[in-house]
Image (cartoon, rainbow, N blue to C red):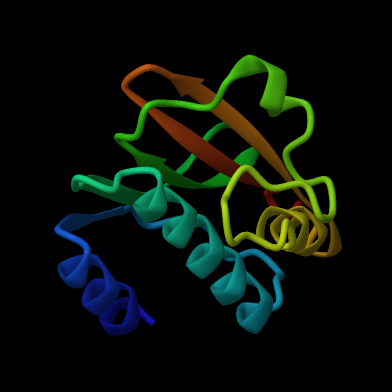
Length: 133
């Protein structure tokens, strides 16, 4: 999957950075999570038409395994935040409004939750999976 993302990044003047830490095993659908990562990275790259860095990282908290996708775009307007993940809602000229809706559905099916932090220097999507007991 990384070569596919890297090729898109190079064509878009985007630096793709990985900071993948060792995390405990969790149950998930690999194919679905691959799609989720592709969608979130694509959105991050599209948020930076003049280039920048997309960071993919993993880490753990006391109770969760976290996948974070960070970009250096202009951030997401607060009026739009509540609508993220709504099917057919898009801010893109040629968007379908299905990419983030798919991500939120994939997260739910894999017992994960998506949180978003955004500001003028970028946006981070946190996909939070509960650790196995």
